[in-house]
Image (cartoon, rainbow, N blue to C red; front, top):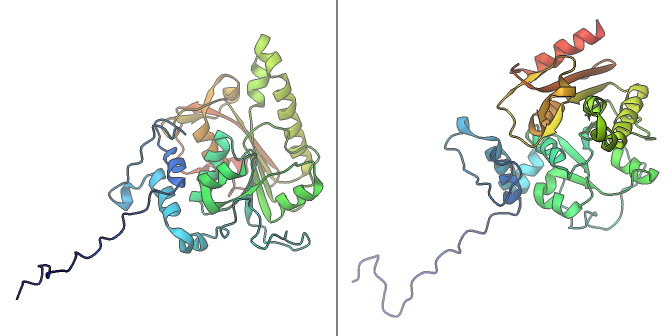
Length: 308
């Protein structure tokens, strides 16, 4: 009698299990989170940490992506939609249905800094809506964690749909987004502005920045006149450099002459969400030497100064 491990005559070996499926398309996008370089899928390499204590920003994003539908439901992400982004039955939701106001709307969602804001919001387990120009690439990058909105904000029906269920807006660029919008129901606006940079430029650079300056001034004016609690973050010149390595400079005039990592700017935007001022909080920031370990306490102190 042959040993248990031997094959009987005429019998073939048991079929081998199929090879593991290729990594999901989101993997390439998540790899962009690698600190060096930023958003370069061609050269970025993802290295998984050995323990939970060592888990990096990239590891946690991949855990969410690889978790599947069960984890998506746990974190409150919407169900998977067809490629065109429409509902499975092809019908739009009735516009008169009220949604819980628990979403964060990110404008310029397919820009570099917009994507950084979205990734930080995913780690916060927030419900995210994003205004984008390319729905497919955004869905490939973030899957069902983001509800992509493609349309013209001058179209009132689209604007109403985009703002439905939104509790806060993060605007990471000076693009005139807030012009002539009905923001009723929005509880907090976070505006990332480079107005100080535009005002501090001169010569040819001032001419090139004149349109951006007008848009930035218009956005700030509309936000201030809205009466909605707002946080306006005037940053230094934005740079595509890794964040988290340097501290900050919050002194007056720092934004006009300083530089700011886009990754750090995105972090501040998201951290500002949970600290809603009674009126409007405006501050300047550039990269510097001051370290901030507790953003909640930092914003609480700034808010107290504004209201006192």
